[in-house]
Length: 332
Image (cartoon, rainbow, N blue to C red):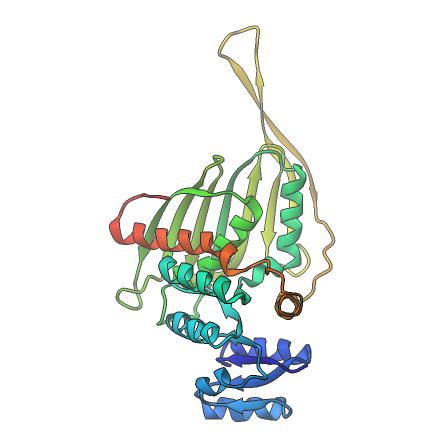
């Protein structure tokens, strides 16, 4: 049944259009750019094109709305859609305010509607594999996670690099650790556009003692999307750019042996073993994510990346932003 509408069909929206059309559920696409709509109409002649968002809201045949517009517009569009009785899939960062995110989450629960956030990497087979490895205990105690998401562009004007790129890293780290953040500290600098940070480095401490460092930048000579998980037994690197080595397990570490014959002394042993690269059957994460949204509507189940589950991500993102503004550590 064709009952899905995609709002915003530009840079990322066109990928959502492609995947929901592939699932056979896309009825309408909506964008203010007539030339873009005309181009998409050639590729998807069976899809209705619409310029006016309000017409989507009054169309009773549309039960699910997919929102891929600039971040500043998310709150208003999601609220109107929920009030009109539509299930929602909204691209990250959901909102740029915890207060707004909490309000929308409460409204969705009151209306008994699906409100799902587009944290695409949580539908990535490699990310899920790392989650499986961590949960198995193979890595031992997780000491820290170091994440880099760097590139030369694309430079945004509606949000800074933290709100643009870091939602991916924060959502992945929260998914892997399943722990509450205790405090955050962030440093942001702007070079290209005044007041819009191009580079941000953030430190996050979790209640279980694990630390995370996230570096994001629009001004780097290399495209890097890499996360390193350091455990007491083993270490893992998740490299999203790599085509055949997305997950690498390193049997490396430093073991501490207490010397009970001499009080207060201990021995540190450097351990270096094999590197294991698990085989991962990779499928486009966005296709899995789109299918999950459709299934949640049909079955009335809570999405993996529901608004409720996404609130801790927004809380960290906002806290880091406040830390950069105030120049101090923020306790959560």
